[in-house]
Image 1 (cartoon, rainbow, N blue to C red):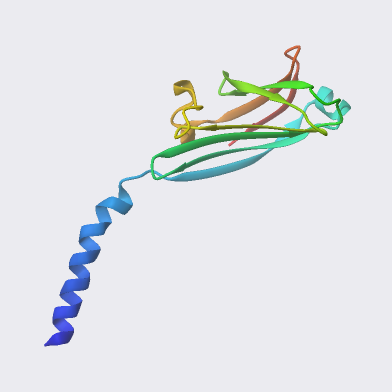
Image 2: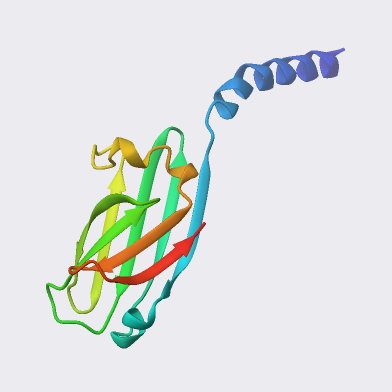
Length: 131
């Protein structure tokens, strides 16, 4: 008889917590960005990541390139300006977070982002990719 009571109690607990677990549309997508000819000329490489976890959304772009410190790059998601990255020792990162208030509403929901583009300060495309 105790076995049936424990089974019923565990099933009840599982039902109570199931809606909480299933209430979020979590995702985590990562892509490597492909250099254009202009990007290859500066040895550019990079990646991008979108993540939603328990309602918190994040969008990240990382760029590595053989450029001087302070070189600016612009990141775009589905054609929307996401932000500017500035290099230090050939590396630059842009990380936007809904919890910190840095993720613009135009990029939400991040799980729906399809394309990422990185341009140089003159607007020339150097990296691109699709999720």
